[in-house]
Image (tube, rainbow, N blue to C red):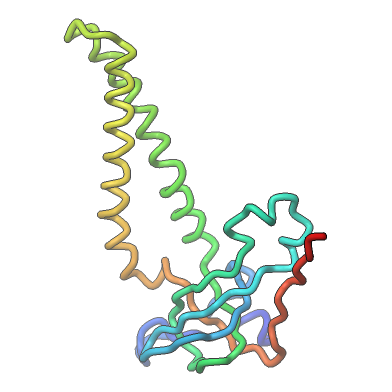
Amino acid sequence: MPLQTLLTVPTTPNLFRKVITLGNLLTENGIVKRVDATTAWVKTIRKSTCEGCSSKDSCEAAKEAEVQAINTVGARVGDTVTVGFERGSFIKISMMLYLFPVFCLIAGAVIGTHLAPGYDMDKSAVQALFSFGFFLLSFLLLRLVSGKLSGNQKYQARIVRIRREPVKAAPCKQSA
């Protein structure tokens, strides 16, 4: 099979090897800025798809960013690389970060609605109090879970290949 379809990446040093299809990865190109024994910091370049978006000037995702990635291919400082992140893991993390706090906020309001009459308190005040409390609790829970997930390679970006051609940044529009 061609290199673009399958890529062998060690997931544990010299013990097991896992085949990752590039079609199952969200990828971004960039340049390696720093490396250590197992990790590289890659400065990603804005994708050309951002150029067609009306929100590109205000969008944080459209700007250059530095990503910490597992360096399984031996990339060195200055190398142009492709960084990949598993699609399923990205969706799980996105839902956890964006939807979980909203669900907690709503759950707090519902619980506050049911508890207010029992304590003879203003329904709106109890709803607001419980919503805010559950919202804060969601961030504390996310903080605890993020510590566990950060050690799991499934939820970390990895360098999937060293590119031969240089990565070009998207052209900047000069304001008149």
